[in-house]
Each structure stands twice: as structure tokens, then as C-alpha cells.
Image (cartoon, rainbow over all chains, first blue to last red; front, side):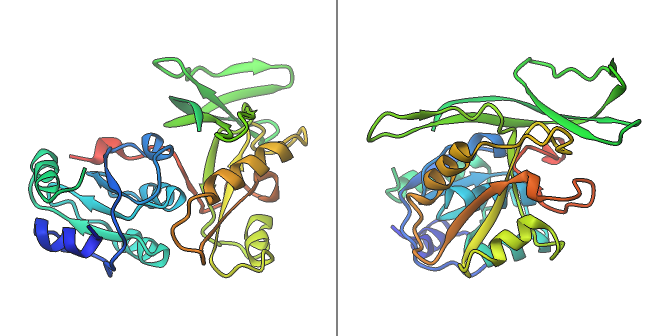
Length: 108
Length: 165
């Protein structure tokens, strides 16, 4: 399943161009220091909207980032993610609801 | 990646020599006390949750310890005269993202920085599985950065966690 399919299936909104990169799995964390060791191609679910998150996500080459609970990234964060080709998405519900939705879509 | 552990990146400054130093604390609460050390008087400037790690080759088992690497910093190209910025420009790779490996000797008063072996391992590790063949991660030593206080780079550490809610 790719990022656009997940966006449409889970009812996510896009902050950047989304693309069709395949998603290999999901990782949930709000800590930059935690995600530095994850594998590439994951969809990162977080509440953290700082630029530091994009710097780390770019390093580990995530497929996209979903901000839960209606969190909205700043313009500088969106610009950096856009430049890095990282899809930024938003979800109004809580992280648990999003996790269930992603699982029901078939992401493991 | 091997032996990833959480802790705090602690930054201190001496107001006599104006130098900065850093260290990684794995204590539950990082030390914040000021102290005298010879001619220096080190004051706590800040601490941030961060992670430290070593690298191990999954094919041959070679382990590269990275004791001197405190964190990584994404270059935002704020200063064309900065060596970190130049390293990216001179890499000949338009898709290069330049990160500086931050050592403890922040002002490099002692000259030491991240080892060549550590830098080679970091570059190999973070480039091995990139999805886009046009993308490159270039990790350089922080000694290329002339002024720590004016650097606008983004440190890979947790800031603003209390702003979440």
C-alpha cells in the first residue's frame, strides 16, 4: 500500500505533495531520539511537529509522517519536508484510533 | 545500529575562554551544576533528550564504536563560508543532505573530533537503504563548522516535548 492509498483510506489531509511511495510498516513515536534507529520506508505517526523531527525522518528515510490529534506543522517544517520529499499528513483523531485504522487498511 | 541508548545531550560553556563542550549523560536526571576545572569555569547551557549508538556490520560483524559522537546536526546552509556547507556544495551530489557529526569538543579547542572510521561507518550506514537513488546523506565532522553559536543547523535531539499539548 502506498502513501496516497493510505491517505485516502484513512481520511488523512495532506500538508505536502504525497506521491506513491510504498509503505513498509508503521512506527509511532514522539521522540526524535527514538526514531533515529528505525528502518527506511516506514510511516511515522507522531504528535511532534518540530523541525528536528523532519531532520531525523529524512536521515532514516521514512515514507511519510502523520501528525495525529489535529497537530499542524509550521510553514518552515512543511517547507523542509517538501524539500526532502517527505509526505506530511494530518489526522484529527487520536493516535490509537489512527493505529487501528492503519491496521484495518492492511498495514502490518 | 547497535547499543542504542537514550540519555541527555548536555552542553556547557566557559565564560572565561568562551569555549563550548558537550557530553552525553545516561543518568536519569542530567547534571546541571556549574564547576571549576583548571582555568575554566563550566556553566550548564542546556540539555536535551537524545540517543547514542554504535554501528555493527550485519555482514561481517565488525563493530564501530562511536564514543565521540554526541549527536547529528542537519545543515541548513545558513553560512556559505562554513565548512559543513562547503562539504555539501563540493560533494558534486545535488541531492546531498549534509549532517555534521557532533563531538564532545564543541569548540574544538583541543583539536579532536569524530574519527575517520566513525565517519565512514556513519556514511555507509545511513546511505545503505535509501529509497531514492538521487538522494545522498553526507555526514561530516563538526570541526568544519567555524562558529557554533551562529549555526542554524537542526540538532537531532528532542526539544519542545513539553509543547506537545
